[in-house]
Image (cartoon, rainbow, N blue to C red; front, top):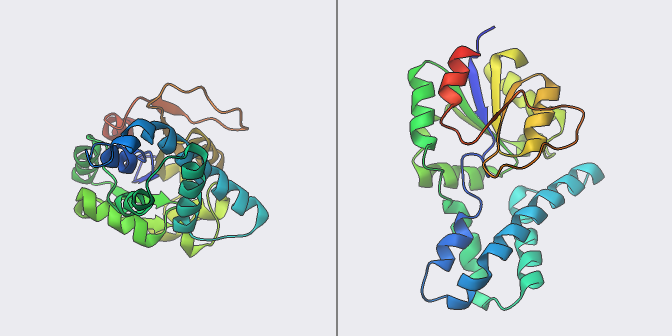
Length: 228
C-alpha cells in the first residue's frame, strides 16, 4: 500500500528547539547568556519532555506552552546567572524557531509528488501556528494537528488517531517522521510506517517497538515516501 500522507513531529524534527537560546546568545547585549546557553537549552528541552510525559501519565493536562514555561523556569534556576529580561526574550523567541535548512524543499517535494503533509505535535495551536508562519511553511502543509484537541500528550494512542480522523487514511498509508526516538517507536507500534531522524547519532530507546527506518536528516523523506 503506497504512502499517501506524510506526518511530522514539530519540535526537534521540523523546528530546531535550541534556536531560541542560540539566537539570544548571538546577541552581543547578552554576553553572560552566551556562555550558559548550551546547558540552558539542554535542560529546557529535557524538562519539557519530562513534564509532558508526567502530566500525561498523571492525567493532569495543561497546554504545551505552560509546560514550556515551566521547563524554562527550571532550567534557568538550575543554571543560574541569567538576567531578568532574558527569560521573556527566550519565551518570545520560541514562537519564531528556525526550521532546519532542508525543511522547505523537503515539504515542497512531497507536495509536488501529490502527497498530503501535516504536523502532529504536542505544541499548542498558537505555538505551532507561530512557528509555521515564521518559517514560511503554510503553503506546504495541509494540516497542523495539536494534541490540544484530545487533551493528552504523545505518545497516547488517541493522539495518533488524529491523523486517520483528519485524512481518512489507514495507518499503513501514513509515513510518520520524528526526531524523538520514543515518538517514532510509539508511532510504529500504532501501525504507522516510521522514520526516526537521528541527527545526533543517539542509541535506540529500549521500548517494545522500533522505528522502521533511521535517517540523519530530512532530505531522504521524499525518496522514502515514494519507494516504501
